[in-house]
Image 1 (cartoon, rainbow, N blue to C red):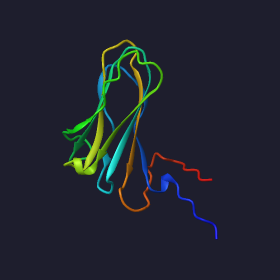
Image 2: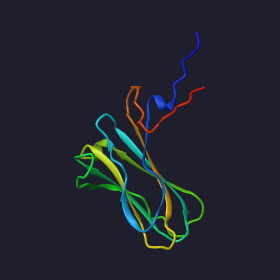
Image 3: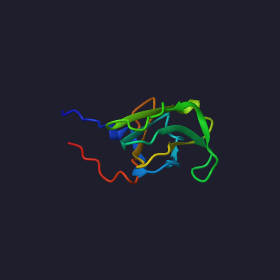
Image 4: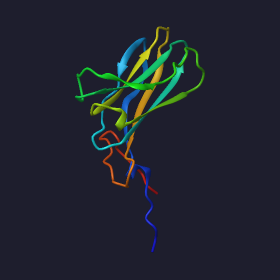
Length: 147
C-alpha cells in the first residue's frame, strides 16, 4: 500500500501580509493575521534593494482585525537593518500565541530616511503546536502544486 505523503501546506498557513513593494521613508503596517486557531506565527521579512534606508520591524497585536489601536508585543522586534546593506536580507519575527493578550497579530515596518526607499515583502507563516489538523490557505494562495 503506498504511503500518503503530507505537504507543509497541509498543516501550515501561508499569508502574504505585505505585498512586494519599494517603500520610501514611512511606517507601514501589514495585514492582520487571526491567531484564534493557531499557536505560532512567524513573520518572514524579506528586504531586497536597500541602498541607503534603514529598516526596523516589530510585531504588534490588536483586539480587532482592522482600524484598531495595536500595541507592541514585548521582545518581538528585529535588529535594525542598516542602509546600504548588500544583497537580500531575511529576518524572522516568531511569536507564540501565549505571549499575546489580543487575538490579531501584525508587523509594523519603519523605513528610515534615504533617497531610494527599500524593497520589502512580508509573509506570515501560521501553525499549531499539536496534531496535524488541516489548514485552509489564504485566498491569495491561488495554487499549491503537489508532486
